Image (cartoon, rainbow, N blue to C red):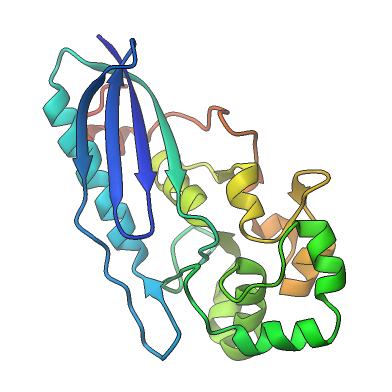
Length: 230
């Protein structure tokens, strides 16, 4: 039987639901909650490996429950938006995931508002300046954590980090990309001026493809580890 698998990497846990080709639910799994790390007041970080382990665990569980008669034809993913993961050139994290709940950029955002930055950022990005979004978070790293900023050559959100771990391809979608506050809502592309405000270039971000686009096949070793037949 053919199946479709939905994967939801949320703010607190990861869920997976497998449907057959008629839309009937076949199996489901839920991970343990992630740990929220608060090294300073107002900071909310997560270990990206906690999220990755949660993804692997729910995939293994749901595929085991489905049994050998089910052939998964596609996996579709949704993920928490607005969180930031700095990574090196090989896509490996150089800092914990800074979640959308994090408030460390409050002073920077207030300063930008007073300087009138929001007057041009909101029409471009569609977002008011907000402390938890990736645009001010990257700028905060540049000003306050130069070691991390220097070590980071790529910036992931959660969805493209997991997609990269699963497939080896750095691809995001317009919705999750928009949540980084670095996208021109008129073109659905990374905007150089928004990236410049953060202190990066569009080349340091994943390629934006339409929602529903095929990213690629699971890496063979990942497929084997979770029991997925390619």
